[in-house]
Image 1 (cartoon, rainbow, N blue to C red):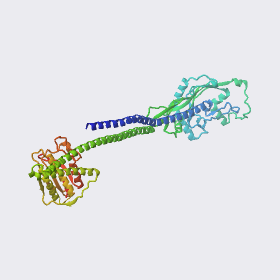
Image 2 (image 1 turned 120 degrees about the horizontal axis):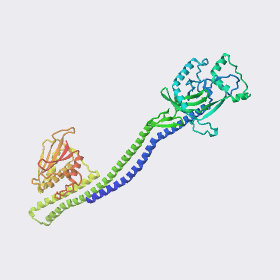
Image 3 (image 1 turned 180 degrees about the vertical axis):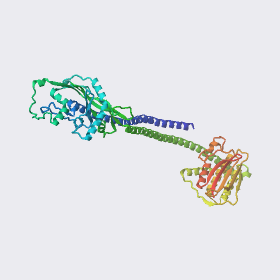
Length: 594
């Protein structure tokens, strides 16, 4: 037992070690790999969102900066609805519509406007003194736009008073930030400047025939000016446009403003960026994108500033991030499930190996015990046979007891045959070759015959048999030889376990079961005694091979009798059960189908 326990413990430790080392290593490496894949799964939408936001922000920045630079190069007088071109080819009074009079040509610009020193806001698309060239519907639209822009006038004038331009620099040295204020000076002769100031009045006079006619001349012919005209000039300071955010209709809007310094006072010129147009240009990206000024911390939103504007491009990747997080959790869960499933499978396999080793050791021990018990069981009847046969052959002992000696020889031979029969039967049982041939017949007669054959030997051993058979029992399905072996084993078992009992009577009864179930009636064969009964540790494995009690005073045996009883009964469709007798002892019941 100790050797078996040690082998079992050693095999358990070896299997546990063989499983633990690769399992722990797999967990460490596999969990790290799963975590890396999960992090990569979550980072992928963030990375794509940031790349998308950077690309969109750069595209918008380039677009706005190109627009700002182009507008910064635009002459200040283009922000009037009518203007006089100082570089034009006409002599005398000559005014033409501004390039901005038909509205912005760039879709990102919503409107151009100008605010003079008297806080008057004008649009190049709306000249209240020359409305004949504008459609009535367009007039209403432009007036509504001017009214919408009117609230920003104070902010624009305050900005113009606070901003300080940098001194003009040679073009080679003007490598400054895009949104740093730069100033240049436009020089106009006084006549051209005056015509721009009075452009609307000149336009009205010319149209009414009161002004001088516009005379066109060849552009190849230089315009002639006197020395006096060259000295009589007007200098106008024109700053570059700067980005500024202001509230328009309770919504933050991006403006571009510049200050124009004239002899009549400062003028603020600007244009309004259409947020909707910028937003429209962001469509088609991998994620929903927005052009925004204020950005709060939002889950799954990547925000990239657009340089110098104070605005940002935001990319909403929250859906993709949530999906990626769910996928990452799935990666972790699948690893844990795979790991636990594999470890459990390996653990079960390891326990099976340990169980097989334990079972092999148990079988080896049982077979060793079986060999010892079989040798003892065979030696005892053989010794009796040898003694009594020698007494009969040599004429030893009391001649009057010769018949008794002969019966002893027959009894020992029967006992020897019973041991051999059980061993052969168990061998057939293990090989699966145990066969019976049940037929309908008189079970009561078979029981009487079997008990009668055993009665003399049992009485000679000191036991008494009482047989009780009900009258009128129906036929039952059984094998006569198998029933004989069942009764023989039960009676032998009862005789051995009642040797120390005061009452060694063995009761054999055959009757019909009181209740009838759907399978039909049953006949009950009962063998009971007044012995000590079976201990609890034996009952759990009562019908297992080599099962015997631990009591050293218990009678010797192979532990195969009850195994054969159950096997032979089951082969006939019968059932074997055990219970304690009410007054002490053991009761075995075999139920046969009738």
